[in-house]
Image 1 (cartoon, one colour):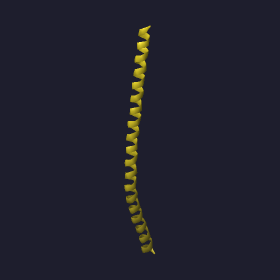
Image 2 (cartoon, helix red, strand yellow):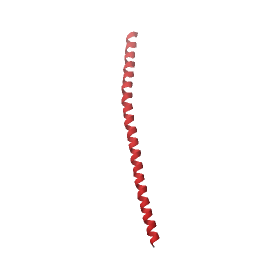
Image 3 (cartoon, rainbow, N blue to C red):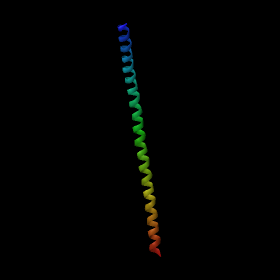
Image 4 (cartoon, rainbow, N blue to C red):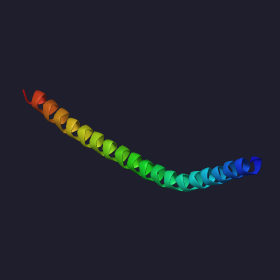
Length: 70
């Protein structure tokens, strides 16, 4: 009876270890994808802010020119 319990617990332990090993590799791939998406999102946000800054600079220059003209 004790041998059967030890065998079942041992098999469950080995199964859990294998499952964790397989899921760890899947998890690493998912983390890599999320890191890439985070990098892409940061790049997109920075490019949008650069564009807004450029537009505000043009508007400011146009308004300063209009004020100097009067």
